[in-house]
Length: 279
Image 1: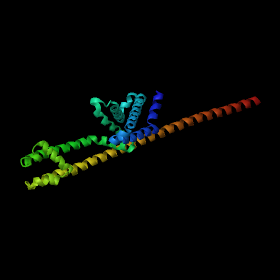
Image 2: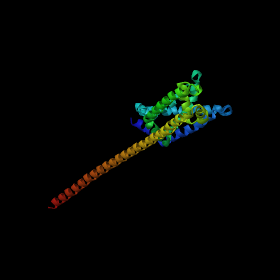
Image 3: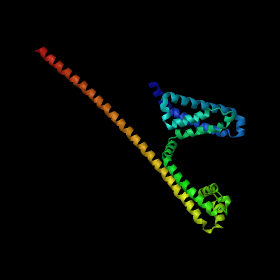
Image 4: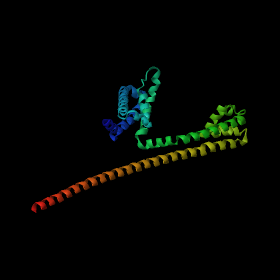
């Protein structure tokens, strides 16, 4: 059991993690180079050898972590993420599975765990996910509401933009992204329905301004929550270290006290013996 703890400590150490991070960076570059046919024709074999080497290193790392941590390995979400990425890399990219070869690029996502600041941001996004889902529900409700309105108001005159509910939703998505919404959507509709600007401006204000600010507020709140939790963990660990040091000092003082008492008693006994001997 002790050797497993030591192995886990080594695998999570700075040297191993720095090596894995560097390997991911280099692999990200080589995967990009493989997209060039000219590079593939000259050094494609070497790139493939290096790619196989990276897969072997990652597989060995995950295997050792599984051995060192046992089932506790799967209690960490980042470990499950790493395990999934490596498993995808090990799937043979031949025949009907050849499309999975393109998924090798997902190995670059391991940098999200290796780089502390990236990991912090991703953790905050996951922390904000429940609230973001509710905001998505708000957007969906407004999309449905305005799609029904748009289909009934403009569907007959502009079937290519608001002919069906699905078409209206796609048009509204274009409005939300502000992609050519003035000349492509608003002006043609307003040439027939002059008051349609109320419909378009209100939708854009709700989805692109209000909801966007809500999303930013939720993400910032998630960042602050993660920072607070990290500070609390550091304070708790610091407090535990102080308490541990305090207990060690008290133990040493008690030991010294007992030794001094023993020495004092020995001196007194020796003096009493000498005195009785003289008498």
